Length: 189
View 1 (cartoon, helix red, strand yellow):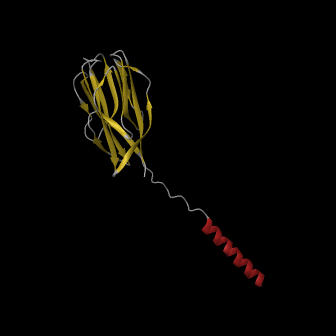
View 2: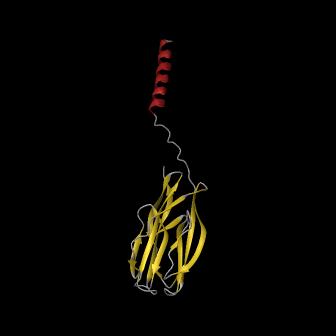
C-alpha cells in the first residue's frame, strides 16, 4: 500500500513538474488588416504646378504622356488599418534636383505625398515626403523595390496592392527613363 501511495505521489510530482516546466503558450498576435484605397486623382501642368495629395493621402501612382508642356496625373490613396484611416503628416519640400538626372528615395518609413517640377528636363524637381501613423503608432513601409524603366513621355504606373510610392528616378528628357520605388504598408506592435 505504501508503494502505491509513493507511486501516486511521484506521478503527481512528475505531472506538476511537466506543467511548470512547459514553455508558456505564445500570445496571439493581434491581427491587423491593411487596405490602401485610391481616393483622389488629379491632373496638373507638369512644367509648373506643385502637387500635394489631399489630407491623409499618399501617392500610389503617376501618369505622364508627352513633353513638359503636357499634363501629369497623380493618383493618391488612403491607408486603412483595421478599417480605421491612418493619419499622414506632410513634411517639407526637398531641395531641387535637375530633372534630367534626378533620383529620390524618401527616408525610412516615409511615403511620397507630393512632387513639384518646373521647366523642362533642365528644370528642377522637388519631392514631399510624409510619415504615417495609426492609433499613435508609426506605420512602417517595408521591402522597398524599384520598378523597371518607363518611357517618361508615355507611361502610367500604379503601385501594387497595399503598396505606396516612396521614390522616383528619372534620366534624360521626355524620351528618357523613369522608375518608381514602392514599399509595403505594415504595422508592428
